[in-house]
Length: 86
Ligand code: FES
Figure (tube, rainbow, N blue to C red):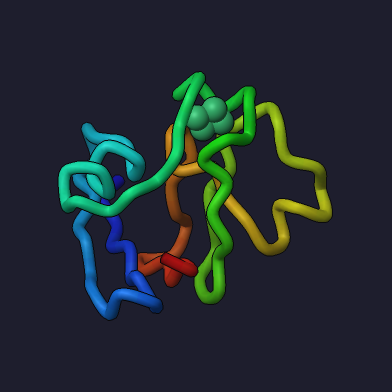
């Protein structure tokens, strides 16, 4: 399902289509997000979520971390918009 990433620090919105990852869309938009495994196991791409609900699909974050972060290489959004700290 498609959703929108709202980048709070850079004041931009990036659409994530259903068939692309959030990480790929960020990188295409020129946003510098460090990544490594790209399958949700290393935690390198961890990004802080400020508003909205992430749809976590990784196997890395702890339950506590899931409250405030997501891994854009695999995870998506439950809410139409996910506001993140980038
Ligand atoms: Fe490894 Fe996202 S790049 S968890």
